[in-house]
Image 1 (cartoon, helix red, strand yellow):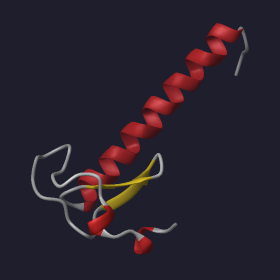
Image 2 (image 1 turned 30 degrees about the vertical axis):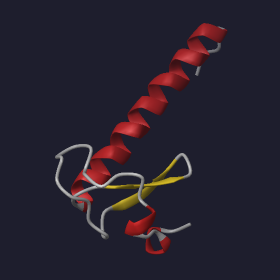
Image 3 (image 1 turned 90 degrees about the vertical axis):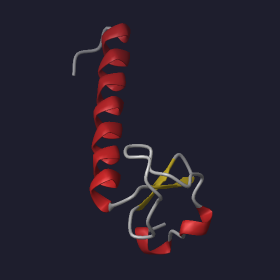
Image 4 (image 1 turned 120 degrees about the vertical axis):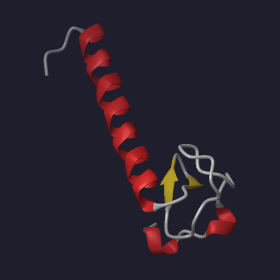
Length: 70
């Protein structure tokens, strides 16, 4: 599913998790199968960056605990 196929009516939230402002139709993303809205594309992109950072940290921890070098 592309961003163009996401609809504000399908969002699981009404306010931006970063700012608390109402979500915008041009600032939607898909996260774990759910449409999540943000007040603007910058907040959406900040969220995507944070998710990538958390995922990388979790993956590194899994490798470390498994004794695998990356």
